[in-house]
Length: 197
Image 1 (cartoon, one colour):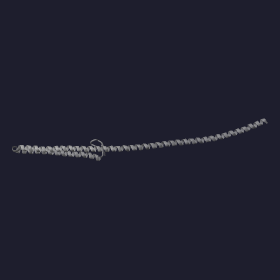
Image 2: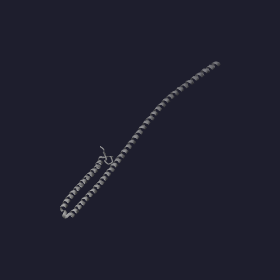
Image 3: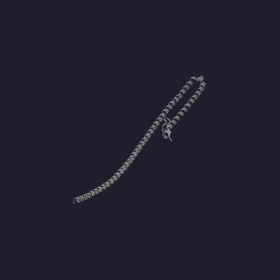
Image 4: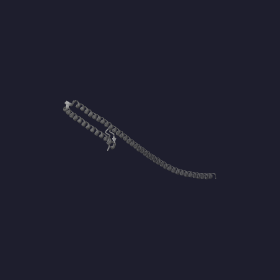
């Protein structure tokens, strides 16, 4: 089952997905804790202010100035804590963003590496396929040439046999013609002798 990066939408491995979402979960958990701490601090501030107001009302006549300073001092302490928590929250946010960025870069690098491996594999398969096709085409061409050669050779042999037969026939006919010429010559000679005698 494939996982999709919640940041860039690319397909990522399950381990990388867990790493990215784990960072988000850690960030979310820390932010929730900070919110809880803030809420507690605000509640403490309110309660402390209420308590101090009660004490101030109680001791207003005697210690109005001291109470006011104590409230301000305590308020400053609590505001300092809130500011510290805000800085911590920003630092956690930056750390989470850095982790997410690194995980995303790693996912992109892995995706590019995988794509390159797949491309190289496809190229190898394509070259093998082309070599196979060329080999088959050569074999088919060689078979065609060989078949054509056998056909021409057979035609040549058949023609040669026919020519030899014709040659033999012509030689026999030439022999018969010479024989007939000799016979004709004998008959002509004997007829000429008969006319002269």
